[in-house]
Amino acid sequence: MNKIVLITGATSGFGKAAAEQFAALGYHLIITGRRKDRLDAVSNTLQQQHRIKVLPLCFDVQDRDTVFNTLTQLPDEWQAIDILINNAGLAAGRDSFEDANLDDWETMIDTNIKGLLYVSKAITPFMMARKKGHVINIGSIAGKETYEKGNVYCASKEAVDAISRAMRIDLLKYGIKVTAIHPGAAETEFSLVRFKGNETAAAKIYEGYQPLTADDVAAIIVYCAQLPAHVCINDLVVTPTAQANSFYMYKE
Ligand code: NDP
Ligand code: 8X3
Image 1 (tube, rainbow, N blue to C red):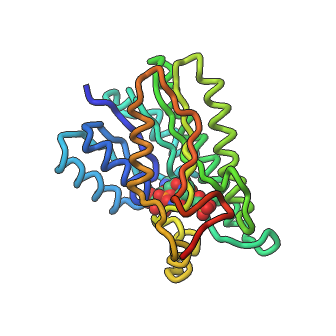
Image 2 (cartoon, rainbow, N blue to C red):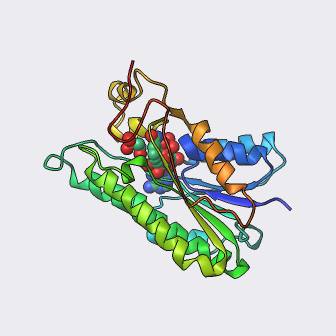
Image 3 (cartoon, rainbow, N blue to C red):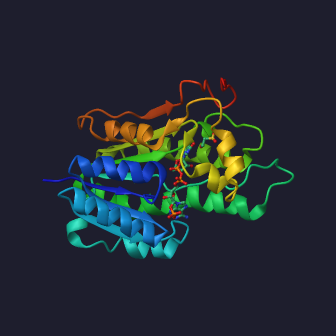
């Protein structure tokens, strides 16, 4: 029987690449995002290319009522979710603490922390009932080492790290695996979003070295998801070879 994977933020970057790779392996997909046109395009393409079912759900993970109304009332055939990938997230701005915008801070906290919690709280009861499941949270190297002007983005990803450890302890009794994956610099729409559409500022982040791609990270997500039932990668940090940590990047 095909497994079901739910991926938040599958309209671009890691989430879209993961949807493509899971689809190629025959998984049925629940994919989410706010941009309905993109979500429908990903859904239609993957259903045409592979013999799988796709359920696209368009919502903002910050919206608590919509998250719970949508996810707790999934059609019966979609409730047996094997893998939840909490990927939806963003950085908004890269400003020193004193200059940072409060709305940016709230957006990051509401998306990266609260959104991940809402989705997890809505979906894990399905896994608890089946005494199995796998939650894969996308953190960041930013959650391992706080860098200059990273303030609340780093804090939000440090929270993802702590929440992952907490979920792993509390969900152990239900046989649910929890994996946290912490990527370094990857060229997706991440920097374009962070710099609010400024293409020059975004491109500069990836100059002088070879960053990770969305497919690199997706392949790691898929690898973690496909390990035998008794094996769980708890915590995984992955960077481009040119990046040693949040601070040291070797640029040509
Ligand atoms: P992208 O900007 O390419 O993708 C982000 C995805 O998240 C999009 O599908 C977007 O969909 C979705 N999303 C954002 N906000 C919301 C929201 N409020 N509600 C629902 N969906 C939302 O970036 P990445 O693929 O790079 O980022 C994916 C994750 O990886 C993020 O959590 C990010 O913090 C993390 N990360 C990224 C790194 C990088 O260097 N790229 C490194 C380490 C971690 P839509 O806009 O349609 O809602
Ligand atoms: C994204 C990687 O280093 O820009 O989480 O914070 S970084």
